Length: 251
Image (cartoon, rainbow, N blue to C red; front, side, top):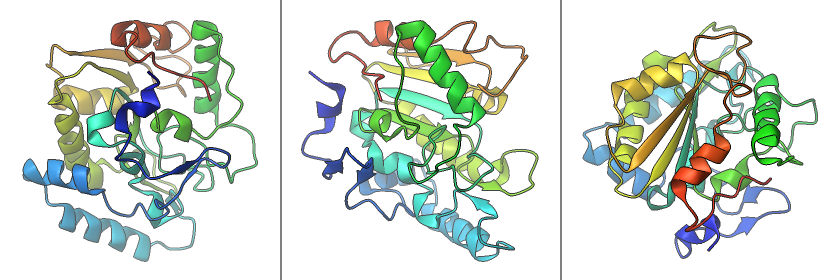
């Protein structure tokens, strides 16, 4: 059984040739299942949407907020229904270049024609060393559609800001990830960077059906945690999840 089959019947059609999910071009709000889950935990999504709208409306110039499109902010949740999440990859915030960010953590937009971001290149280097997989594209939508929730600690980045906008996003991220923590099936958490690890520590992931794999942020040259080069997590996460279905890391 392929991992992408987990959510048959609840997905919109997927155009693999362009990595565009048909019918999901507007991801400015959460889909119904995620909305019900976080609202059920007492989170006020309407107030969050208003703050994000104000952030984009008040930006000093086009492209000063990453991702560039307001409609991409919650894209990660539209690719992965809550019932289909099997792997969570958590980063810090979107790429500072809004043309690279596409709403999926570490993914580079298929519209971007420049070189791969450093973080993504190091992720792919780790994947190559760990599983001998050489991705041919920088858009991670293929992972997302197979049950990988690609989420950052902060879902937007303001141009010139030295750190993630946790003031806006921390409570939402904790609410969404707490919902994932409550799922009873095995889930592998790949947590990269101190901001991501701090968010997970605040949940925390105590579900014995889940396992957390912690690394330094891919961008880090030296760090207190092991880098992806020192301890690649992909094979270990796949072994933990088992073969029903096998985790597919190809792109």
